[in-house]
Amino acid sequence: SYYRRSYNDKDRYRFVWKEIMNNKNIGFIGAGNMASALIGGLIDSGKDVTNIIASSPEKDHLDRLKKSFNIKTTHKNEEIIQLSEIVILAVKPNVVEPVLLEIKDLLFQRNPLLISIAAGIQINSLEQHLKPEYRIIRAMPNTPASIKEGVTAISPNQFVTEEDIDDAKEMFSSVGSVAEIKENNIDIYTALIGSGPAYVFYLIESLLESSANLELTDTEKTTLLASMISGSANLAKNSEDSPEELRKKVTSPGGVTQSAIEEFESRGLKKIIKESMKVAEIKSIDLGNK
Image (cartoon, rainbow, N blue to C red):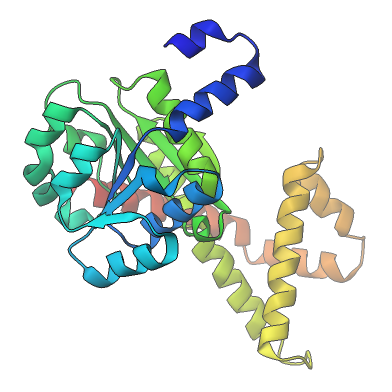
């Protein structure tokens, strides 16, 4: 593309590329929680509301988007295709097929980039409904995207361009971190990171149940526990030390922490976690094959 050839300086290139991305119309088919999170992230990152449109059969979903973001909304999926260079398929998995059957002829005419965030729907399933060489990216954001602290994996098919990948990364970076992975890695990603927030909530839930003798309200204890996990996670992300090294620095010989760690080890906690991740990965593979 012309801006790749014209700008060698990384910062100048990014500025020009982002300006071009910001001028592209982005359409959402589906107006649920993840679509709302992405729309909010895009607008907060500078995307003009006039370049965003969403469709849904649910009037209350569209009314909420209209009230929250003042974007254009419609009940007609065809209108999304007509107006958009990038189309986000943000519907429940069970309605992906009828939606694609409805819009595929218009997709072929307009040829927008299609990004699917429908859980469990593989790229080859999408390709079966579309013409050969259609540009598709599968994306999996996790729930902290709702507060712009999500992690999104994107997996492009072989026909997308570098510009398409740049556009997807720019869009999902508005709600957190983005990693490009091969689709055959998406099941272990789902087990580890896509479902990961539930494991953290489960840990907080367990620690909260262990805190009966701490004379604070549940709200106060939840805040302290969540802050402890958030702070520890940020330290792990920013430190040059490995998580194992950081853990050892907190674990004084013969101290309180060591007694808990030894109990974890004696009960095989690491083994339980590894086995649980494998079970979750297998489940993700099974759901994707249905």
